[in-house]
Image 1 (cartoon, rainbow, N blue to C red):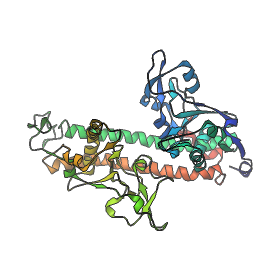
Image 2: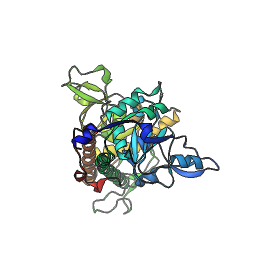
Image 3: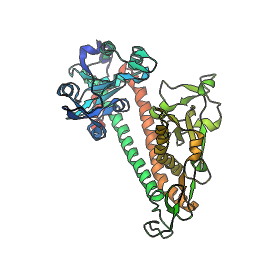
Image 4: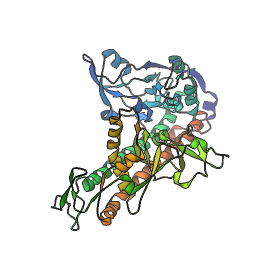
Length: 437
């Protein structure tokens, strides 16, 4: 960006350089309407860009002709979240990177169509991801308690500071290139997790782990015995135990009681939201001298046991664990990957317990952990062989997750510098190979 561009930023209201539609398409299937794919709130919230590769993962619903005309996703548009339980979850944007034939924007979102002569969609997406825009939307949210909404006037009147359209395009390319790399890492990690789960299923559900001759145990006639507890056959010598047999489950702190006394002695608090989104500017802080048992590091297993039941391998850097989340540490010779996938596999059972109790929120107690029933092998050698096979998969998963987190941090630091002209950009500086074209 040259000096001329820096001094010729022009101020516009969004309504002066774009049009927008508020979605009224819900998840229901209605007679007489056309079948569509629905890009929902979570699809917008969790992605910097929406691409055609994601279409098959969108849910199927129906919409009227008029709704499709207004809310069909087209390349260059930006979708934002409009309604949510917290004010900080509204106004979150995503760029529409491709033209879609049958994908529309779902309820609780708004679709912005820039005037291409004045506003580049990728630049707008980056701008709306800035702290300035996020603060504006949070401050202009209406509602209280369990529901917040973004009024139409708040969307129309947000101020944009725009350089020339040419500079906007180059800035947009930079952020699209970063996003492509993050999206690629996510796709690889989805495949890695699928591979790990498939391997676990082959060894510990189908019981076709390699026997002493390297052949699949059950398929090769390995001895199986009936187990009355789980009502199925398991390999001879294997045992049924509870999850606390293979791991220690340590609950987090009520971190609001341990606030930092100085800026130099603090850690970010890892709440359930931070498990999903990573550490952000909205994350809280806790004193750095909390017990080591509730400090979290990259590679640790976290299991949220209240509200949402989720398990993950943490890669967001050092932090302090909040209550309602277990830090799970393998015991003895049990491999971390084995413990992680055991819990991941058992989540469906825990969710069934919550459903049977007719609650809208999951809530797993220590009793539920103690009552869990999992199958473990009789031999340490089988677990070690599994660890040797799966550890390269897990290590690559962690490495790519860390890389994506670092790219996100760099993107967030670069964003305000480009927006206010502190960093220069010219067309020759941008590698377009990774951009959303």
